[in-house]
Length: 319
Ligand code: SF4
Ligand code: SF4
Image (cartoon, rainbow, N blue to C red):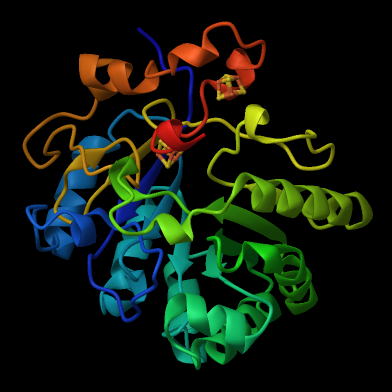
């Protein structure tokens, strides 16, 4: 048995958040029975000392909730950077003051993913529910760039803001982002639950990808797609934006605020409690293999199958 992949973990350091975005996928918001709480620093060290032992781990993304609500985030960052693991922090930017940025950099943080939901305060504010947040995020992006840290601007797109994606990419680049990434809205557990109005239409997705592709052909800044958009959803394949496939359960693993393993941010299905169970064999377990092999029957004769692997599993019914 050998490891063919470098591992990338997303660690949801907290379930707490200071915003209430309409599209939020956090599984605990959608499942009232999802385990509550968060690990303290000692418990985090103890859990990851076991999980990371012997694993070729490249990056750990610290997410949430909003990771900066944790006052000990710097100590968490320091723990991972001491293990020579690249730390990326995904944040809504509201709490990323100059002082906080300085202490995170001192702790070893080198990459930031900041959420930009629109090109102006109106679009961005409507999506995150806080009209003031646009100014915070612009200030935070500028502060990160002034320190020469890697900055990715991330836009989650719903039916309400996807038409602004090209202008948002331009705004991100104007502010100095090293790359722009588009995450489509994905309903948690694939259940629409009253959020159907947020799902972008096929026409909207095609229009956004085509315009972003045109932008990417002219700009040096990479434009990427985070959650897969399947080739069969597109009238024309982009030439300057790579299409992606689901890496959940292959190289990407999620660890929730209390130490449970998941294979997908948007799925509440848990694959064990890593406080008591060993991660080492999880990538080979039946439930992991079932998730990875969960390919829709219509894909079996598709020539894109090797590149696409059926797209996002949480969106399969709606593609
Ligand atoms: S593999 Fe499936 S999801 Fe992907 S392009 Fe083909 S039919 Fe569409
Ligand atoms: S199913 Fe895969 S592609 Fe879709 S949200 Fe989950 S990890 Fe991402």
